[in-house]
Image (cartoon, rainbow, N blue to C red; front, side, top):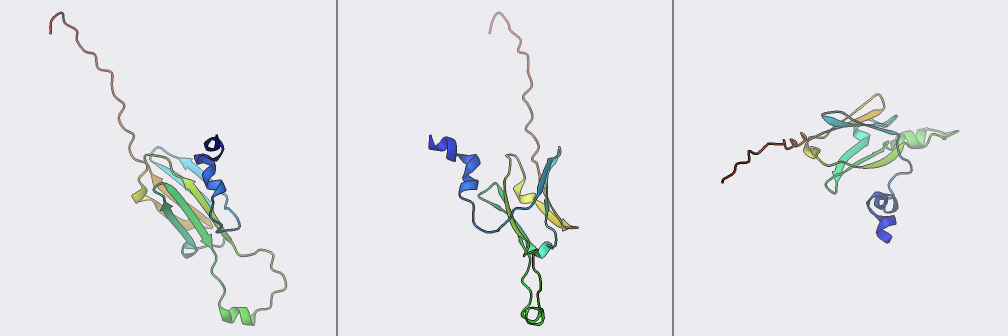
Length: 136
């Protein structure tokens, strides 16, 4: 009974790593040749985002802005700080039949795009008629 409620779909929700305070908005589109995942990462560059595959088929995306230098901290007087430090974490279980070794990622205009190429679909077996004779 416990597997019904704590099975695979809910495992990541209950045992998630306490890394970031927020998740980023994400779009996932499947094309004939690949899966394309777009994640909003406003204010973050390519050095601020980490993309990796964990546990064989889990795409893990994390991002956090770099800390300000000590000189900037000492010379700056903050009056209001409502925006906070942008950080996020997302984990996506990848489907079967993808080329994990060929995943590409890039950041442009505040959007991280991850392209996961698909393996070619296996050919469907054709129906082949067999001639029936009276003798073997």
